[in-house]
Length: 212
Image (spheres, one colour):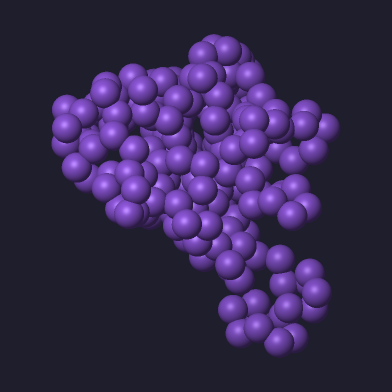
């Protein structure tokens, strides 16, 4: 159930949150069970103000030293990515045509042979596969929260639903490495926010976005 990085290393359990692969059926089963238990216990509680369905979503943002890790490369994510490509391109010929980029290209015989890209364009990876890979990862997170909102709304139509996010404002402005789409995530909930940490490195003293 642990997320797997591009070097096939499993995310460590005693580290950052969001260590699990959201494409894993075991995660989905356990998560729905947990969410329904919370709803049963707290939906009618007088102290409940709103539902916060996640804290800073996206794949692990604490990077291993010397590596910009991207998740998830497990078999479940691979199968889900292939389904995403089938819906987008419909035929392997269309995918091969659109994935051409470098002087040398891989041509696939079937969509079942397609692998997830493991290098970004900055590391000489082909651009179109990387764009598709990011769109898939972002869609997976958006669909994850849309399904959570649906479960809550089936049991509680009164309390607002909140989601707070975090991105590296200096080098990952839009959550690309985290695998999220901030604009699409915002559409799934009633209240959407972004976490800032002005006290880290005294950023509030020198960076305008933290001053206020």
